[in-house]
Amino acid sequence: MSKKRSQRNVRRNVRRNVRRSEPKLIAIGAFYKENTNHGFGLTLRQDVVEVFKQVVDSTKAAYDRWMFEENLTPDQLADILIDQTEHEICPVLNYHAFGTRLHPGKEHAPVSRSWDQLSEEFIKALAVFFKNVWWLQENGFIKSDNFNGMHYVYLS
Image (cartoon, rainbow, N blue to C red; front, side):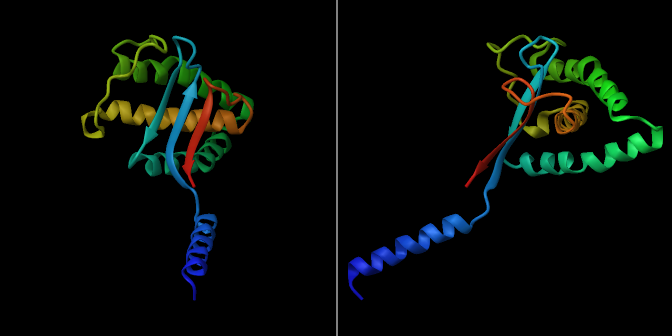
């Protein structure tokens, strides 16, 4: 086999393998009214991505069970989640990320910390925040844009 033909076969096999490989989730973000001082948004990367994807994936069953047990309509659950997100969760997240209960604006970057330096309160609030944003978007109560909704980044 000629050298040229061999190189062509290698390139073809590489292209086939690239097309067959599954895209890898490398970042997941949740945003709720991030363009206001009552909102919050955060993109997670690296090793915590899969953990928070599993949190989001478990949301539908958990919230369906909650609606059934409490006899809630989707509109009633949305009202509860919006109120919880705006008045309980976002202030906690902003306090831990920025040192203030209100989002200070785009020009301020959150304090960078490793996961082992974050408080349990922040991590629990973040999990609820991701679940609430996912459910609200999935059920049409918020539309995904630059400041609202779930954002997924894949490496193909």
